[in-house]
Amino acid sequence: MINIGSRLLKIARMLGKCSKPADIGTDHAYIPIYLIQSGMCSSVVATDNRKGPLMKAERNIEKHRLSDRIELRLGDGLKPIQEDECDAFIIAGMGGVVIAEILEASVEKAKKAEALVLQPAYYDEVLREFLLHNGFRIETESLVKDEGRIYTIIKARYDGVTRSEDILHLHIGRALFDNRDPLLNEFLERRIRIQTRIVEGMRKSVKRDEQVYAKEYNLLNKMKEAYDNLFTG
Image 1 (cartoon, rainbow, N blue to C red):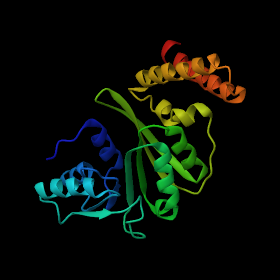
Image 2 (image 1 turned 180 degrees about the vertical axis):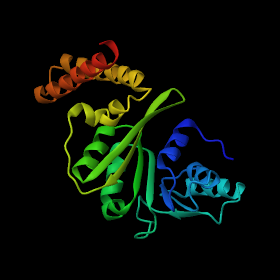
Image 3 (image 1 turned 30 degrees about the vertical axis):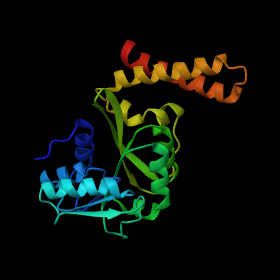
Image 4 (image 1 turned 120 degrees about the vertical axis):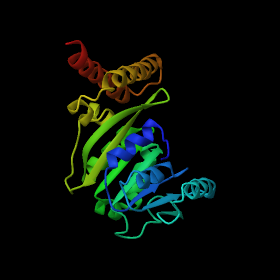
């Protein structure tokens, strides 16, 4: 059984059982290998837009004797996937802007998926806003700590309902509060420190945009209020 890190393991487990998922930007193909070995899926399509990672993935797949169960494809985003071919998509380790662009470029394929498991490396708020404004329901979110960093994992599915969200929950998912995620305390503390630096930097700037400053200041206050309500009340 392949040994994968806590981040990839959490992603795989959030996906759960499915028929034929696609791992977009697979890199070393660790997630597809785990999905097959754990019995969660019977076959997987693994894609990447660079030949180098696909060569690494091919070596790993051959090492674990899974060449007949994992199919590799070169291409951008969901484009290498045929219509109705895969019932779920995993997109992990990219920025939230890039993930949103990938989904937008092949939105009809994304709409048909039974599950989207997305792990933005940053700009989570851009991805959440895209999902909510384009009819995707965020079913759950979870935090995972790997090599000292905390990552957010989002599971979503299209239901056609357009939604809006408070600025706080665009930046820190509502489901993390609803589920009282075990890492939320630490995650909120870190986000408050980062947001404080942003606000302080803008406050000292002689050329600051007052509207942008007010927005960032409001977000900081909402983060602090949420932290106080949860952990110091």
